Length: 301
Image (cartoon, rainbow, N blue to C red; front, side, top):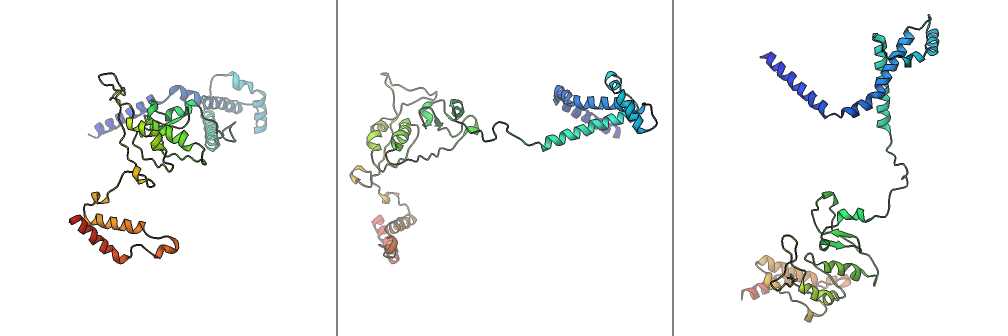
């Protein structure tokens, strides 16, 4: 039984070693170890020459070995004496350790770009960040854009869609960024328009909507051959001219007494004075419960 277990273990180790060896790049392994093999070989030859040099002391032997150093390079037969073999192996190991230490301590220098590698981007740099469908992009310039896809094919090119545009009055923030983005009509939009001009300039376009596409991305047409559009549902909140604004009825969204309390709290917070008038509240805290009762009465009756 023990012999069988031992054989199984040996077989497993052999299989592991075989797999490891098959995974190694043999060509690379040989090329990287040639310097150490040559070092061991020639050190072995040098040790053999020194050991067989004429002379009684170290000095005379060294002089003789130096005078006949050409014998180290001319011969191809290594010495099999244990001293010479040990000398060659030790020399190769020392060289390997020195090279390893040099590589581990080496600084990762960027020669030629010590002062930075910043440069202007080109079409190839921005291409991975753009969608192949031009209508599924956020236009940044005439040639650069950012895809609207939340999960691109390569995750490393995913970017958030938060964009800040800074510019003075009349610098073209609306004309050259907001309008082109709205005209893409590739998603739902919430637009804050202090000037109130976007609804007049882009409203008809949004009411018509973008061309409707099928599952394959092809534009759909009706029986007469006309392009089918998907109109936007436009809702406008105009706090300056209420005649041009949709209206909001908070009572339509009240479902429980908690909703009543939320509405009353919102009214109180938004009618509170600021600065010196902060203490002169339009609603005093004592009227909160009365307001809740009144709203409850309105809702019930």
